[in-house]
Image (tube, rainbow, N blue to C red; front, side, top):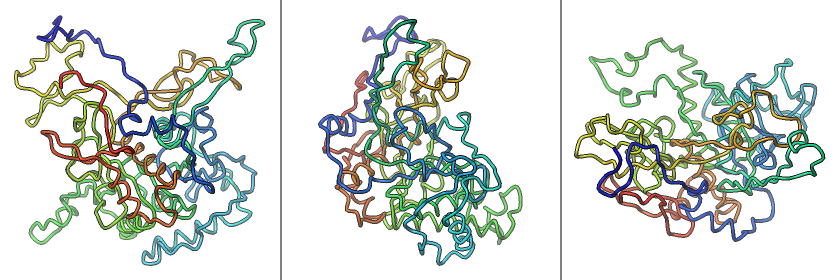
Length: 466
């Protein structure tokens, strides 16, 4: 096909350009950052990111990461500190070792005791010499998330061997910023194993270090909550959720899973816990986003595309807010939303009644693992040079999903704390209420949702077809 009634080419992979920071402009933050706001004096807003590891040496993240506090629970049950050598003895001063968050959770309270002992003065960085599992191979998602929250613009010198013989030193600007470039990021890296202990320890650690915002841009594989609608359904006297479980869960593990859900809510009562709501149109959100309510500080985040429409993979139902994200095609009984620029669009038998006008090809741009790892690969097969930059394309990537949207919201809440809009003494529900007060209601034929806006106005840059 060469064009539709508007004359716009179809099926030709001809896409409009878009600004890499459109998501910041959409929520009213880009202009604010350009004006050079002054963060409050004192400690920076601290964002605990429970995800995969992060490329801490990325130029736009290097000054944002708290290297002393970054921890890895993937490699070691009680954590290893990836930014310290194996023989280094920690000099941490966690401010909240006496937390009472686990007082009513016996298994969690025992784990808290172990973790407090682990963090006591004189502890070693790597228990039993086990190195942290924070290789660039593992750091794709965490690096993308960290950039959306708190990346800073950077000026990087080109590596000497790529400047040419006799060439003078030359620096390249990387003008990228997260929503809160004043915050402090603490990567708490975990795996996706079905291990409740690891995630309990991650949330306890976020509590111990006094995080202002806790971000969980993923689901938790609790075997009793993967399909939450089965739980509590009686089938001839037995619980349907238990009957649907493929492997019997030992009593202690079941207790840990139950305590983890209670712990997340308990932590959210003290500090906001921002969660991704899922990428499969889940009604009510994935776990633990589906714990969100007006009575706690859990914030469930779905995604809206650059046209102001609910993203094809998201839902407004059950989400606390929707934030900028990418989009996907849909073809089901509810909606047909196809990309008319897709190369084989003409061969796809698109029905005459469709929602193609709602599709947006705009994606979210964020930081990526530099070099040959990450989502965006380097043209060079070798590792990055020890010093300097040889190419910058691999330093950034296209991203999306409710993961990206949740990171943007976590940065938004953190910015509220950094600029003094949220009181230092505000707890999780208070921070959630502040966020809601900074949202604009948006109504579409797919439903209504709240969308964060620093200025009270929003903009959506992809206007084609609307």
